[in-house]
Image (cartoon, rainbow over all chains, first blue to last red; front, side, top):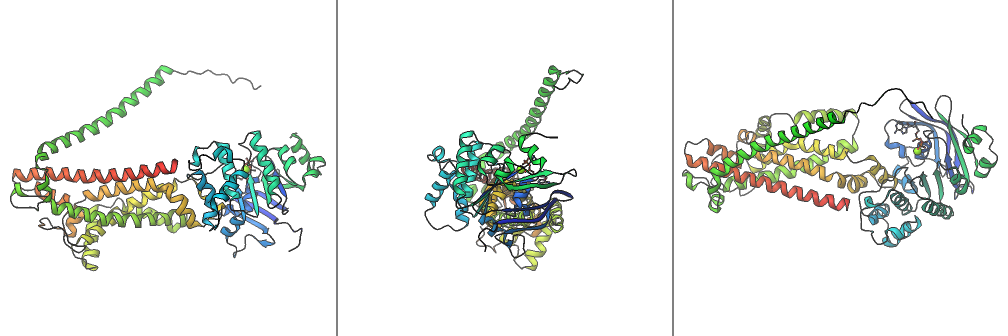
Length: 257
Length: 294
Ligand SMILES: Nc1ncnc2c1ncn2[C@@H]1O[C@H](COP(=O)(O)OP(=O)(O)OP(=O)(O)O)[C@@H](O)[C@H]1O
Ligand SMILES: [Mg+2]
């Protein structure tokens, strides 16, 4: 495989839920070991696009798509591809924290366990929780239920849970929307650190965050017909300093209509 | 700022509070009526049967002499039959619910099955007796045995277990399933490790209801050919048997006063068995819930 070939690539991707189409004609590539941000107004299909990358939308009966998504050059939606295998390699943190009703430890240990991890599980769990900037808050109560954590702590637990299976790509859907500035900063530092080994896609409503952490930025925006298209996809520096499309400029500077 | 829409709030707090209080009292009254009836019934039975409930009543076989008659055969019969029926209904019921909810949900085949299961739950129990007689007693040649009785009752309560389990599975939020899949868990791992534990308390409630129903059933077992006079405890799965409600029915229909007392005592035993099984299940359920919620 070529060095600079994108790890995930969409071609003419078009997604609908039943009769309602959400995104159209999306062509973009996620570069390996880089952070790619997806921005756009609420309801513009950012989560939808992200969920195409690990076949999470397969679970929604009304979902259908055309075009293709490639993962490391292979068609992700080919019949021969096992979604379970894909999701092991492409981890995800959801928009709403969804801890399992188990202990904090068991939440993080779940992924390694179901994937047959052989090694020091306790060390792996500790490292994952540390990286998610949660360790100091939970180290004395790993046996407590994850549901006893606060919303922001739950979100960081979900990040730790995704890290524990050591995926190649991590998809994060607004991971910081429930976090205070301190944990947000910790998560952003984590993303920078992780981008040495992992490819990261992050959906965010926070323009500063996109500008701070990401290398590439994709801007989704609904057309007249309410179906979103990819207005602009470029290096983050380019998007934020010298956007080619005036809609992009209006969105990132907060001017609308 | 937006303009204020003209209009006023007529909040009528007194009236709203009164409505709330009336409803509160109505609910209280209806539960008092129910509890009152139950208390009267229990009192009546305890007054009549209490002195008959003793060790020799529990360990004696039925007899022509009212004062010597005991409940032993029926008690053992009931426990064996319920053990068979409960185990079967639980395993088949949960498995069927998992298939319908987790594997086949939303296709037309599953929907047809679901509608039919709901209908089956409403079929009179005597019909199940006839079914049991034809299939288990005659066709499978199990005879009028503990096994045939257990199978028949299992069929009878299966729809209840399936419906309750489906309900419990449906109540598990899909975000939990997604969380499992997103970590590379297979469908079975997600069901077994995440969905089932969370649905288990609800499933157990369904099983409690089902078993409570089964233990009081008389008609299907009579149709199937359970005995009314059994001077022995069942010695194996193919042994003939009787159960508590049949024994009670038999005593009630005798003219002698002594048998009526025995019947009341039998009802007390039946209630104790029922309540202790329910208590066990509730205990299990609470245990489980505490472990999950921490
Ligand atoms: N499961 C679904 N079934 C039907 N329609 C859906 C489903 N999920 C999302 N949609 C629709 O698709 C559109 C895009 O939703 P999506 O969640 O991708 O938006 P988003 O960009 O992530 O928004 P937000 O920033 O608010 O999270 C919305 O109009 C939504 O109503
Ligand atoms: Mg979203």
